[in-house]
Every structure is written in structure tokens, then in C-alpha cells.
Length: 247
Length: 184
Image (tube, rainbow over all chains, first blue to last red; front, side, top):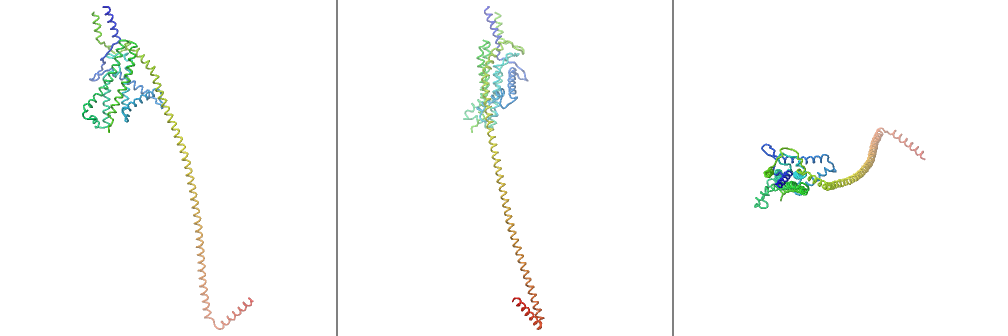
């Protein structure tokens, strides 16, 4: 009996330490919509970080870039490089879109892995990376869909839909299906990776609070960066694919 | 035993924090691990990042220097070209000046020659006029003389009688005589 009680006490203590909460959301009622407030809050923080750092970096632009400006120019160069390799010659107008995607996802992921969100307690749920929630990733993926449709239609007009019967009309169902699988795979890939990262870290923390989660956290950082890059690259690739002409 | 089930029950029940607040539990918030991760990230990342950014800065500096040098060279060339243009312009001016003066001189020469010819022609004309005048005067004079002689002859023929004839002849003879004496 005593042993049992003891073990139960440790279990309870463990539970107190871990407090894993999955599927718990802090809801706000906006109109007739229920929104996940924790996602909104962290998104705002991410947006504030991005806008603030960008504004600070370009507040005093110089010909020979200093630290902050240099870093942001490097990031911009990187994004341009990615969009150029994926979209091709007419990548110019799409750099802002790809850059927004990449930076938002990257900073979201890294904020989830690096910022001590759990210091702040919510009435329900807990703060985590915005990409930890499927709504965010679906929104980003749908934006990508809209973007590549717009790119194709504005470039080729209605003949854009000719690509559905390329190379043969037999592939029409598969080509149509592709339009649905693209955002689906984009959103689920990002969501799954980030959620898995955070869950692994949380579970490991609940088991062994110190040292052991650190390698997994580094792995999480790595994966987060890779996921952001993959999302941006795929979005650019889809846009480039819908814009490329075969004439 | 009831305690056990209670505990399990409480395990199955998700407690809610109730309201906003701060979680001060160092383990639950994972602060230590986070700070370690951040520290390692900053420690290693800083070197890599600063290397990267330094390289980029150096590249930009080099590019700027290169273009600066190119600009210098281009400016030099422009200056040289300008100098040459100036020289050529001066030469062209000189050529034009000498050409003008030559033309001027030619013109003067021509004018002089023409005026000389003109003068000569004028002289000729004057001489011709003079000559013609002289001739006309001579003719007039001859005619007048002839008429006077005819008149005199008429007068002589009409008024000459024997006596007067003889007297004249003798006078003339006398005159010739004196002339002969003088010549002798």
C-alpha cells in the first residue's frame, strides 16, 4: 500500500511537472467564429518580431551594410536565390510572397523551439508555435494554392487550364486531384513536423526534465528550419510550374 | 485504495489554469534546457554568422572598390578624350582661320587685279575718247578751214579784177624775192 502510494505520488509529481496538453485550445469568440487565441497571440508576436527587426534593420540604410542591415540583406539574397531557382526568370514579383512564407514559417517554428512560451499561462491550452496549429498551416497552404492559380491565370489566361490535359487527357482526374493534394500535403507536412517536434520535446521534458531533451531540441531547430525552407521552396516551385510555358 | 483511484481520476482530468498568469515552475517551463539551447546556438551560431556576414561585407566592399576603380579609369579616359577633343578643336579653328585669311587675301588680290584692269580699261576709254575728240576737232577744223578757203576763193574769184590780180602777183613775187634773199 505504501509503495503504491509512493509511486502514485511520484506519478502525480511527474504529471505536475509535465502537464502535457494536447488538443486544448484557448477560444475567442469573434462573431460566430471560434478562434484559437493562443495561435493568434503567438502569430502576433512573430509578426511583431519580424516587422520590428526589419524596421530596425533598415532604419538607417548604408551603402556598405552594417550588422543588422547586412544580415537582412543576406536573408533577402537567400530568398531571392530560392525563388529564382524555383520560379525562373520572372521571379521578381513573387519574391515578397515567397519571402513572407519563408520568414513567417521560419520565425514561427524557431519561436516555438526557442522562446519560453510556457512562462505565460492561458486559461486553456498553452502558447506554442503558430505552425503548431493546423489552421495556420492550412491557411498558408491555401494562400499558396491561390498564388499559383493567380500566377498561372495572369500569365497565360484561360489557356492555363490546358495544362490539365497535358500530356494526355487520360491524366485529367489526376491533374485535378493534384490541385487538392498540393495544399493538403503542404499543410500536413508542416503541421505534422512541428507538432511532432514540440510533442517529442514536451514528452521528453516530462520524463527527464534536464539535459536529455537538449539534443532533441536541436533536432527540432534543424527540422523547423528545413520545414520552412521546404514550404517556401515548394510554394515557389508550384508557382513556377504553373507559370512555365511549353511553347 | 480510494486515494489511488482518486489520483488516477485526477490524472485523467485536465486541470485548467483558469486565467492568465505566469508559470514560475522552472522545470515545467523548460527554462534550463531552453537557455542551454539558446546559449549553444548563440555560441556557435555567432561565429558562423559573423563569418558569413563578414565575407559578404568584404565582397560588397571589393565590388564597390572595383567599380570605384573602374569609374576612376573611365573618368581618366573621359578627361583624355576631352583634352584631345579640345586640341582637335583648336587645330580646326586654326585651319579655319588660315583658310579664312587666305580667302581674304585671294579676294583682295583679285579685287586689286580687277581694279587695275578696270583702271587700264578706263584709261583706254579716256584715251580713245580723247583721240576721237581730237579727230572730230581736226575734222571740224578742216571743214571750217576748207569752207573758209572756199569762201576766200569765192571772194577772190568774184572780186579779183586785173589790176588787183597784177598787184597781188607782184606782191607775191616780191615776197618770194625776199624769201629767196633770206634763204640765200
